[in-house]
Image (cartoon, rainbow, N blue to C red; front, side, top):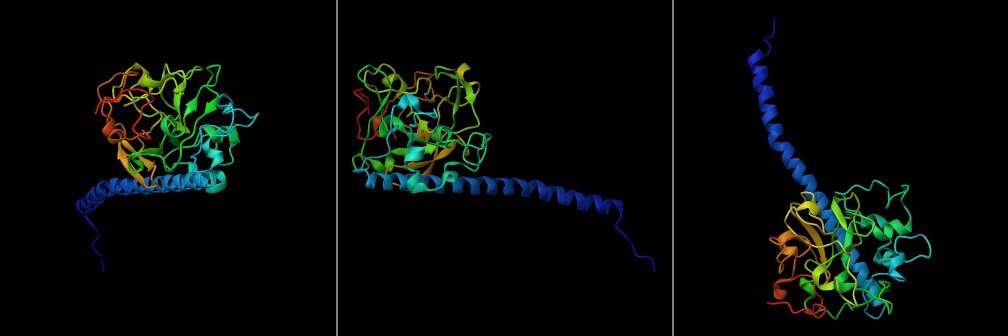
Length: 293
């Protein structure tokens, strides 16, 4: 007895149904994958801030400083000068926690690649510290940026609303540290607080990364990027953050830059406009600048 098979039309209908279902499900799977990476990154930040608090407990409440030696020697093999990356490692005990699963590590900095040396690890984690306020970079008596200031874990005036660490990118820069547009495939161990470049550029006491500020205008220096800053927009125009009180949370970039005119200002003129909304300062002071509410 002959068994009737599918007709061509029936096969085409089945194929069409499968294609429609695939079109519906594949984006869902992709979103689930991104959500899983986002959750891992948030967990990483939570563990980093907890390790920083353990460091503070062993160092008279002092948070990890900008550098444990001459700050101008960061990134060199000798003499060894470490950033928070290695000063917190006795508490983190896992370099892989410093990598965001959504980022690539082309040099194997935190694996066993050709760039897996401490001086690269000090500079290129996928998370950056709010150094301007929480790990101040300072000038010595000769005006050189060799020194590190310190603040305490318990001294902040609004720790639940102060960003401690956030996801970061290492921007493309020239030999003088000025941005040349876009971002590299590496993270950055520091993130410049939005709007602070104009305040600190001429400071006789504090130093600031020369090319970093926040702006939403895709100008020439941004090469079409939404802003020029070390903070990333890895997850739906925002990023994960660890706050000074120890909790970790996701914030849209508008929230990260709240209290500034980053949405309208051009690089590098972004300024702090409302101190009460700002999420980066430590104790409501801005290095002598008068910020309106």
